[in-house]
Image 1 (cartoon, rainbow, N blue to C red):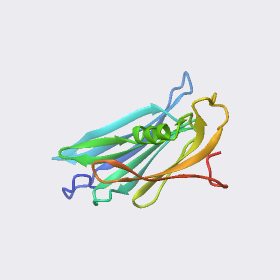
Image 2: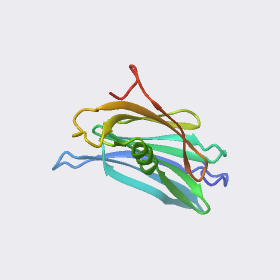
Image 3: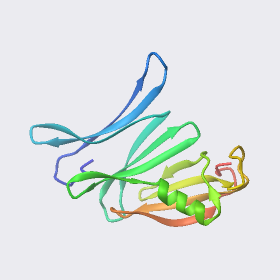
Length: 168
């Protein structure tokens, strides 16, 4: 993936480490760039998680980017990595998702599913009202479609999700 369009591809490596004493698995990623005669770390993340998946993703303005999806139990966290001026920048999806939920009187209690198309990120979120104890959804799940412009995450569409593909 050539983030900064300099003709030299950066590499994204994912890994899993298991602590032999606690059996806790930590997964993460490293974005390494070919700078001069060697490699340098441009960005990295390490969190206790069940899995980390990094996928090449193209912003609507054509900027090469990467979608990082981190699964931990029933929670799925995600963000977009892209080149911004002279460094890798991270765009976290949580503020956009939480804004959509707040506008509908809902709160996040996990159980979300994140998928993507060539230019969109789709997040299906179970419906929990503020009165819910978080054990069982008490409202319709919603499906949020985002696009990434190259310098911002944009909420394109929000709809109620029903049927076998819902997050319930």
